[in-house]
Each structure stands twice: as structure tokens, then as C-alpha cells.
Amino acid sequence: MLKPQSFEAEFVQKLGYHYLLAMPEGYEADEAKKWPLLVFLHGAGERGSDLELLKKHGPPKLLAAGKKLEAIVVCPQVPAGEAWNPHGVKALVDKLVKEFRVDESRVYLTGISMGGFGTWETILEYPETFAAAAPGCGGAGIGILKFDRIKELPLWIFHGEADTVVPVAYTTSAQVRLKDSKGLKVTIYPGVGHDSWTQTYDNPEFWAWIFAQKRD
Image (cartoon, rainbow, N blue to C red; front, side, top):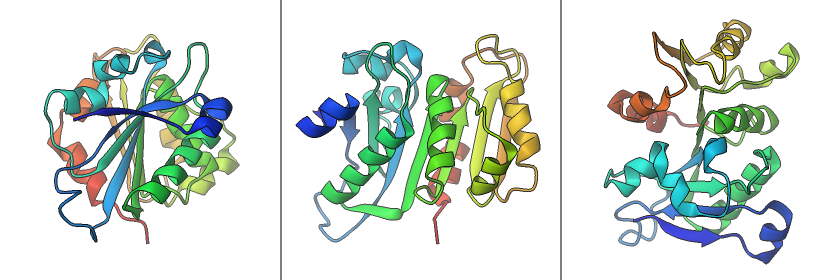
């Protein structure tokens, strides 16, 4: 079950991130086992102070409907009018690593739309934090030299070919810049608009792929 939690006072003042947290089945049973951590960054429409909004899309929607993921899943929320701060995302990861039994070699980041942009920005700032990332219908206005920082990071990029909110050119441009990368996967859905995430997160192959990634 998703449980609403919030940062301690210091983090609330600095970042304003509240979040939903889901623990995997069996977490309490084995006190020695460490677990993957999946971070999901929502889109612009879910900003605010109502955590229930996060259950409209992506992993929080699936978890609320009863899907089981063998990972600690955290879904932070951006305050109204703000965008994702990569340093805030990293601070949240660091906080959870300290509080829970997180396998630091298996920390994953995914996001959609504004959260796709946030995913790009965060992995470009902190490429060594994550074992894999999956930015959806987002983009990165970053120079090519900075893309070199993530050429070793497994990526699954997804986008709708007919997206009129965030043009698919963001993804195809990143694909060109990362053409020599290891473990790059790109899915562009023909005829699909801005919602490229429903079929991605409903795809068992996506979950098998992301949880198979492990940082050395």
C-alpha cells in the first residue's frame, strides 16, 4: 500500500517535496536483505500538495491498483508552479538510502513529460547514482559533451511519435547523441500522442529490463 510521507522539516523548507512510498512485500520479513529503489518523477499536471494526484499515471497508478513491484518505490511531488530539481531528487535518494535497506547498486529513475525532463537532468548531474533510467516523453537541452557522462548508463527512452506537447524530436535528438552508448533502448510509438507511458509501464518487458540492471 502506498503510504504518504514527507521530508523532515529541513528538507520541506529547502525542497518542498512530499512523497508516496511503497515498500515491497517481504521487506519486514528479512532484516538482512537489501532492495532495489525505484524513483518516479511525475508530469506537470500532478504538481501541488495533493499526493492522490500522483496515482493518475505511471508506477503509483499501478501500485494503487494492486501491482506488485519487488522494489522500494518512491514518488515525490513537486509544489505547484515549480519544476524538478535534480539536486532535490538526489537528496531524496540519499535520504532513503540512509533510512531503508536500499541496494545502492540497483537504484533506478524514471519519469514522464516534465518528469522525463527531470529524469534527464538528474542523470546528467548524477550519472553514477543510478543503475538505469527511463525518461518518457521528455528531453534534455544539454550540450553533447555532457551526454558523454551517461554513455555507460543503461537507458530506455520512450516517446509517442505524434506527441504535440513534447515533440518526439527531443528523443530522436538524444538517440543520435547517444548512438554509441551501451545498453540504449529507444521506443517510439507510431501514431501515439503525449501518453507514451501507459503502454510502457504496462509492458512486463520494461520491468524485467529495468530490474535486471545493476551498477558495478
